Length: 387
Image 1: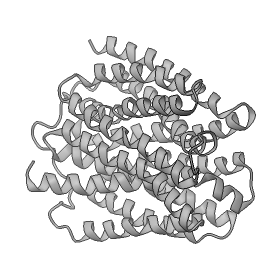
Image 2 (image 1 turned 45 degrees about the horizontal axis):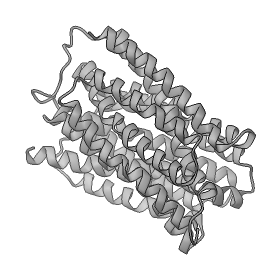
Image 3 (image 1 turned 90 degrees about the horizontal axis):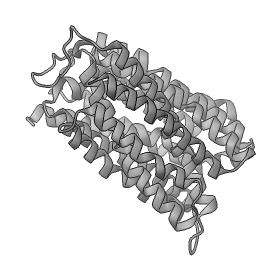
Image 4 (image 1 turned 30 degrees about the vertical axis):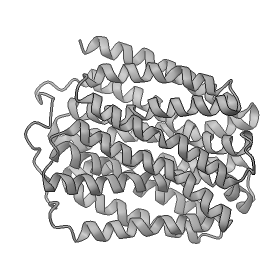
């Protein structure tokens, strides 16, 4: 990679990590927020669902904005918007203000993926490798979210501080991007060798089916991320148990996903993404199902293996979109991807809260394994159409 490609990769990796931290600290601090606001788990997850919903819905206008202006400018909106929204959420003392802050945080977070991935798809030649490293940064954010929340709750016992702390790096990143004159403000032309798709033969049918699978996978991802931290807190017993210990274990499990992110990106440069996508979905199914029936150490082992396989899917998805969608509108392609992934996926938060309260938390994992089975069938059909 040349120096410009490295700068783009660094700022997008930072943004990807912060995006997931901002979104996932809600799940990691679910119980303390519930107790502080004095509402039921279903009511609180309904508020979370609203935040996750705009996280998905905002991706489409963000994609159009990145296409019409530039990915750099959209990325700047992400950093400044999330810093402001996280600060409002952290300072909130009432339910309406907390709800408004959380929804705004979800909305501005939706600007990240379309801008960051558009920069990579249009500007970096080794796209699969870059997508993999970008995914590793996202997984680092996913893994750090419960650790940061658990650490603050252990020593300060105030969920407000979690959001205030989260605002600081986003504000710093906005300043770094503002004064970085190497990344162009103008909409960049794609570099040679970064796009696979013949622009005159856009496979609309395959693209729509891929979006369907990504929407279902969004339910799986959000359901897993919402349920795992609280399940470990309440059902896995450690010596000297504490929120910090549970957060550390959750971080370790999600941190394994970083290996999967790198491997997925690495393999997508060597195996046709549409086939690799099918393989990963099928391999993830048994581990999610086992999480619904296993307990204690065996549950943690199954969760770790699911994390490894499931997170390897994300750079493959991003590579697949870049290969299917004409480069001039790739930002809009990512917009459609994330509106279904995060928009449909937002419903999993409410679903997980309802199933947990009416049946059990273990039943959530069994329900998610059923969704993965549907994805497997659809991915098999796409692989046949792509032959």
